[in-house]
Amino acid sequence: MSSLIQARLSRRSLLAGLASVSALALAGCATTAPMPTLPPGPVRHAVPPDVLAMYAARPEEDYPVPAADVSMVDPIYWRQEVDNPTGQPAGRVVVDTSNFFLYWTMPNGRATRYGVGLGRAGFEWSGEGHIAYKRKWPVWTPPGEMVDRQPELEMYRNGQPPGLLNALGARALYIHQGNRDTIYRVHGTMDPSTIGKAVSSGCVRLLFQDVMDLYERVTPGAPIVVV
Image 1 (cartoon, rainbow, N blue to C red):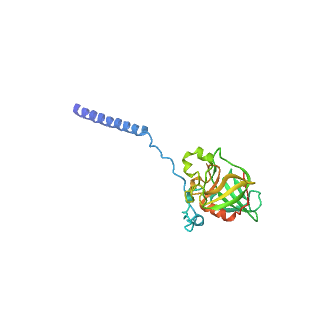
Image 2 (image 1 turned 45 degrees about the vertical axis):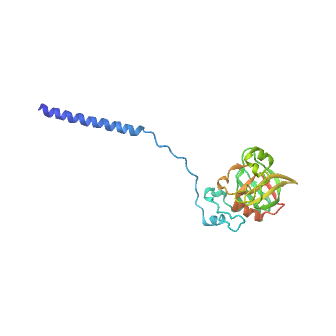
Image 3 (image 1 turned 180 degrees about the vertical axis):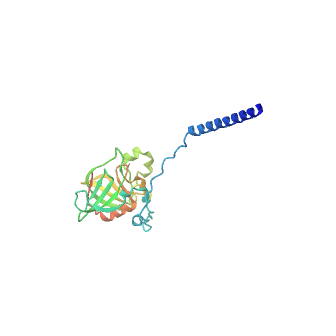
């Protein structure tokens, strides 16, 4: 009889011990630090076929232009025709700096709207002027003060040759006030991540396909308003 009691007690002790081990294991799981989370990648948007066609490659250019990856761009910044909200008459370039839009105003109360990148803090420009002239595949000559500020640009003091990596890109529209060059431009960029952001040294940048479209619409002398 005593042997049976002893066996039961031993079995009871074993079960209690296993329960304690299980409890400790569960406690250990509960207090384990969570796995670190990786930062989210860039948001990608589904791009309709008509928009893909609008931003397709342009192999016929002097420097063949690749397709723009507009899946990285908020759809609000894709080129589109809209009602003209600017109050400006047809035939003007209007830059809405608050919303990162550029409008080319058209007859019948319509406008073509483009998404743009703008000047970062301390490099913004606003006012009225005109497009004095425009260039395909321009040479970019940085202002002397920019070279002083960024010595790595010294190699371009006398001009950066045209091409895909040129700072002005595929097209440039030159903004003057009266007879004075403002040194600000409307120009192209191959970097879709800059559209809708304040990143430049004051110029207005559009995707290559957009600035090429705008170039065909704007004639020298057209007014520009940056507000």
